[in-house]
Length: 388
Image (cartoon, rainbow, N blue to C red; front, side, top):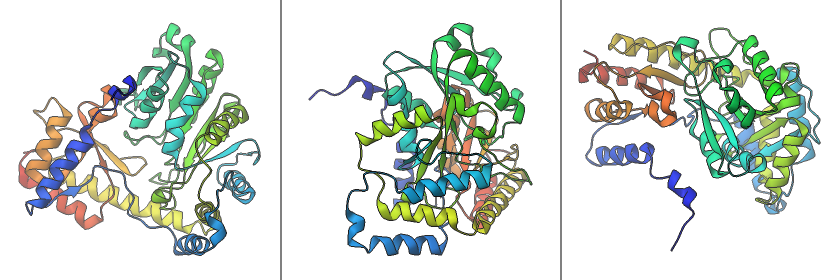
C-alpha cells in the first residue's frame, strides 16, 4: 500500500506517547493527575442537555440536516450583537462548524493552494499549523515572545514574507500563552492585513474565560475587521458543549461562503438535535457563563499559588483554561522535563515544544481538575524535588 506523502507530517506525537506512559502507570496502580489535555469537566446547563435529549427522541431528527437551521443562524447573529456589539447577516456571514477545530482544519483548503504561504503564531494550538499543512501550504511562524507580552510583532515579519502570505491565523485570549491583546494590537493587525492583502482568521474560543475583571471581545468589533477576515467561535468551553462539537465561522461574507461551499461537499450538516442545543445554550441565562468563568478563575488561583509554594513559579494567566509555565531549572528540553515530571510526581502536562519552536522551555497545564486535585498535584511536585 502507498499513502499520501503529506501524512509524513502527522506521525505519532508526544500526546500519544504521554498517553501510553499514563496507561502503564495506571495499570501498575500508580496515580496520575492529568493536566495535559484541555477537555472541560464542567457540564452544560441542564436545560441545554434536556433540549438535546428531547430533540434526539424525534424520528425526524435523524434525517440529513443539509444546512444550518434558520433559527440557529438568527440566534448566532443576535448573540454576536448582544455580546460583542457586532452585526452579522444571518444568511451570508455565518457558517456553523462541527466544532471550531473542524473548521480550522478545513478552512485552509478553501483558501490556500499548494505552495501558498500561511502565517501561523508560534507557539500555537497545533491545528493552526496542521490545517495549512493539510492544504500543502508553506508555513511561516510568527514568534510570540515573553519580552513582547506574547504579542505578534508585525514589524518583524519580513517584507517578502508579508507580500507572499495569503492567510494569517491569530488568537487572543491565547492558547497556550494565556495572554490577551490590547485594542492597539488589533488595529495594527487590520492595517497589516489590508496593506498586504492577507485574509485573517481570528480564533476566539476563550473570549468568555477572561479573568480579574477584564472582558473579552471580538476581533470583528474593530473597524475594518470584516473587510479582511473572519472569526471562529465555539460553545465548547463557554457552555460546556465540547463533545457536542458546535462552532461557527463568522465575518467576511466571501470567506464564509467559500468555507460553506467546501463543507457542502464534505458533510451533510450538523446533527439537528445539536443545532437545537446550540440555540438553547445561546438563549439560556448567561449566569451560567459567569459561574463557569468563576470556576476556572478559582482553579487558576489555586494552581498558581499552590505550585508556587512547591517552588514552581509562573505568570498568572490572564484568560483561557490553561497555565503557561517555565520548565524546571537544569532542564534544556520541555519534553524531557514533562516525562520526568510524570515519572517522579505523577503529574502529566504538555511540553511547550508541541506548540511550535517558540514553545520550547515551557509547558502548558489545563485547568481541568477540581481545586483539591490541583492542590494534590502541587504536593506531589513538591515531594518530587524537581524544583528544590
